[in-house]
Image (cartoon, rainbow, N blue to C red):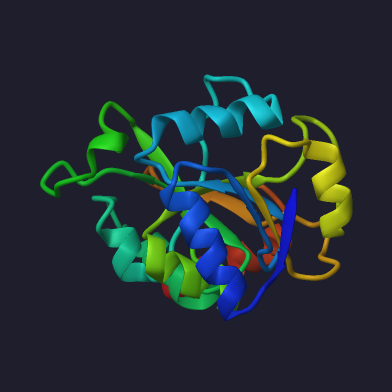
Length: 206
């Protein structure tokens, strides 16, 4: 398995593997992630297979900017705008409904929601700006802890991963997931951002 540094050369190598239909392990501002292009059904299927993730669990999406997020056709409620303004880029995942008046990419057809975040990681945002949004899920076997170091990720996931980008030793804490698809935002997973901080931000933005 090839391991590259999180620099301009590593970004070029990762983009090439992704464009060729491969799966790449990337560093984020939280944990290492398994990444693939959402339009490549074989690569997305490989992510499910490598991770052992149940097929009924949609993969979250990482974006380089709010503009990339809006291009997915999501419905940005007032609560979502307030949370994004406070924590994007950062360890906040927002699960959006779709705006019925907005176009959405074909790979999101039939979906009721999509979970998206903009990571606070310069290397990764640069890669996302180059490749477009990517489906990214934590780089661990389903139900197992996420390894913190790139060598441990590589040994845990095996040879199906096309490339590992070495971003050093990362945290074990995932992003906080807030569902903003309904009338009121709901914290579905407390992670790097505490539930109380989410509630305080929503009060301030309301």
